[in-house]
Image (cartoon, rainbow, N blue to C red; front, side, top):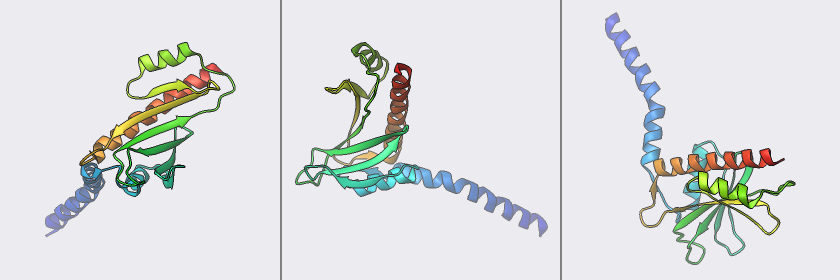
Length: 165
C-alpha cells in the first residue's frame, strides 16, 4: 500500500511540474490575429509584458507596452473601419542627445535581420518590425518568437545608442 501511495504522490508531482509546460504549449498553439487586439495584448501580458489597448489618431487599434527599457507601440495596420486589421507593426522611437550617424544605422541594418532602423528629421532613431497576421493569423509560438526577436533588436538598439553617448 505504501508503495502505491508513493507512486501516486510521484505521479501527482510529475503532473504538477508538467502543467506549466502544457499550458505554455497550449498557448503556443492558439492562433492570434490582428483582428483581435485585446487577445494580442492578453498574450503579451501572459508573456510578462504590460500591454494596454488604445487607439491611434485615425481610430485604428494600438497596443502600448515596453521592452528593453523603452516605450514600444504595436500599431494595427491594414484595417477596415478601425477593425478587421491584417497586420501589426512593432515600433520604437528614441529621442537622443548624441545623434547616430547614417553609417551606424546602415551597419545596424546590415547586421540585424527583421527590424528596420532609420533616423527621423531630428536624427533620432526609429525602429520598426512588421508581422503579417492575415487570414488565420499566427500561432502563439510564432508570436512569442517574434516578440523575442523584437525584444533582442530593441536591446541592440539600446546598446548602439549607449555606445554613442
